[in-house]
Length: 93
Image (cartoon, rainbow, N blue to C red; front, side):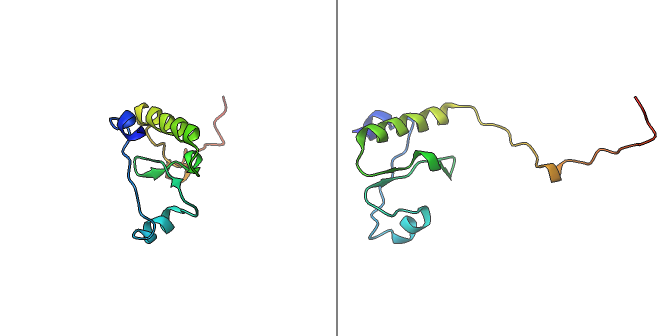
């Protein structure tokens, strides 16, 4: 099983769409089986697998595990959060 192989790097959670309809709707499950991937609480959209494609599922689990091994990136402040630089039109270089 993939959960045994990758269990030390990836957490596997199974949701029964009949019992967890709200969860399924929130993350956009439209077919079964659907595999969703999350990193640090955020869904990794390009890793979704719909259907029972074992090769793609394995590849995406490997990608997620590799992403989890990367050091966290510091968020840069948005442009509007940066202090405005004062311009002095009288100064010349």
